[in-house]
Length: 265
Image (cartoon, rainbow, N blue to C red; front, side):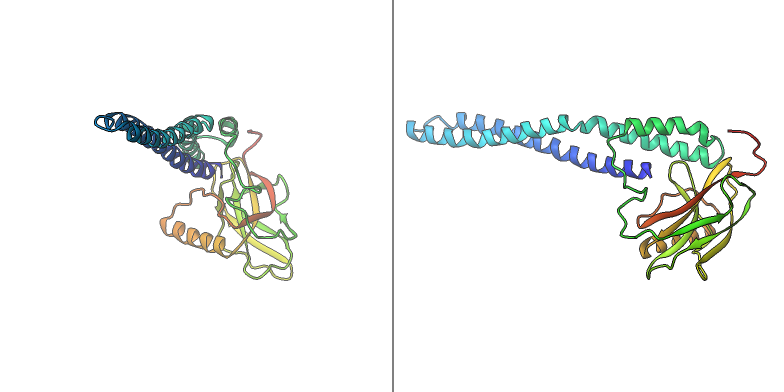
């Protein structure tokens, strides 16, 4: 989630920085050219014509100079360079953290301090309110995850069940394992509730000692995204973490513990 927000911020900052730098250079150059050109063209010009021409050139040069100066000041005031550097640095660091977590080279507990430092150093990055990547028109409905219970020990195959209110047309229900950073691993396929209840046995071969099983509501676009992702990963035989698609909201979740993990943090 934060990684995607950082990428979007970096793209915006890079575009803004390029625009402001271009405006500053072009306007500064134009002001210099107009000022010098008006002086060079004075030779052989009558006093009245010289005055009129110089005044017009000076006015235009002043406008360009003002625009160039403001562009430079905005660039500095908005900390474009430092924020862009921070965003690019943390994009790379978060990708490395994600890979270490995915391949079991780092525990969630060990990775949290680094992630918290990222949040602190990039506090200016705006995140969507509920963790989705954009505002969703979906309205929450009453739902629950009854099985497994909170802090239950689970194996690789996990029987899940719960309740859900009637789904509105064009909405879909999905289960996913959710990481500490908001990334998800969508499971199996869309849920098909019957008489207000849903059930599915999911398989999770991750290495995290503790993890969250979440129930999500998805709109049509998000549903298609998840279906395509499931199809692709099943063909590839590789199921990496992914960000939550826009158009999803979390309805319920439960924190569980991997069986045989003992008292490890």
